[in-house]
Image (cartoon, rainbow, N blue to C red):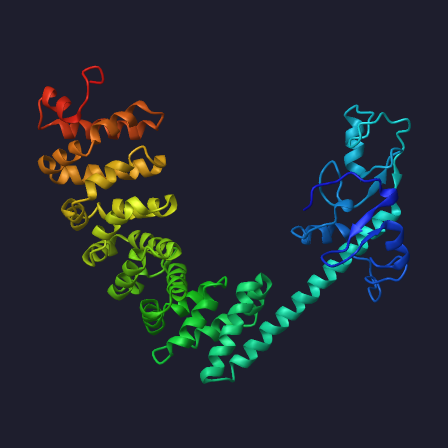
Length: 448
């Protein structure tokens, strides 16, 4: 929405858009350019007057001419009134201004010699006409889009081969670009229709486009249950392993949708082939969106305790540890959460201990990112040090753990974090005398 520029509405000028001319209010009215006044561009054929409040609400993101904006609220005016200074405001806003004891014009700060507010019917009609034009155009586009979606669904029932791929591609573009088309596709049985195309003999071209549609729909429980059939999951996993980066991300998001929630049967979906494909996606630093999607699904999978050993078995721990220094905050929290969850199973703790960079990389994250990152990092370090105290404590001390833990203890972190830091500090000092520990940690006796 544009910033307000003061202008007396007795001589309003409207910018008619790129390539258009700037017209004053009188010329605009006489020429009927905004409709319903002289020539009637908009309201011709409209039997009922459209509700301005509703139109303003539905066209919230549209660029509105600055002369339609109230200088007080910076919102479009619906009941404009003009003061004796010639400035125009939304009635409710200017009356509130007066109720606060002001006797001036908010824009010019002139003292008002007359506090009468005069309805600006001409401007109100122009505002209504302009919004009506935009609103009806939007509705027309919406009807065209919904009609196109229905047409494509009907066509999808008949076409085969390359024509099917093209029809799916067009439907995917419609669903991605127009949110109103998603509900129409669902209402017309589109999810079931597109899902029926996924099976053991589906080509990857058809599968990629079908998955691109499904991942953009609000799937109901029956649709999700249908997609969790083994043959369909197998195809989705195959497409994930062999598709383009966009397709890989779509497959990952779709599988995440299918296994989230109670009784989702995630153990039936999470095959070793899927986990291997996810690990490849996460390790590909060229595509941050792919890393985020892959970590998101791994996180969901790891919430099922029965699957954690499988995640460790495919070698997920070392690549995740190596990725830690290069991840953005959102991905970092997901990766730390996955590692923390994997540290709750024996195989995961052993894999973390055996990875040379676990302790150095995790120690660096203490007090360097968010509090939740610090909490997860402490939990991982605790699990590793408890597993092999003598070996890991020495590595942690060399990596500067003690100084980091003292920072946590002295910070404004929550008491649970501070207590865990104290416990970890004590744990790491068990194999040293006080003097040697202080020396190893490069701490002064004052800090002690």
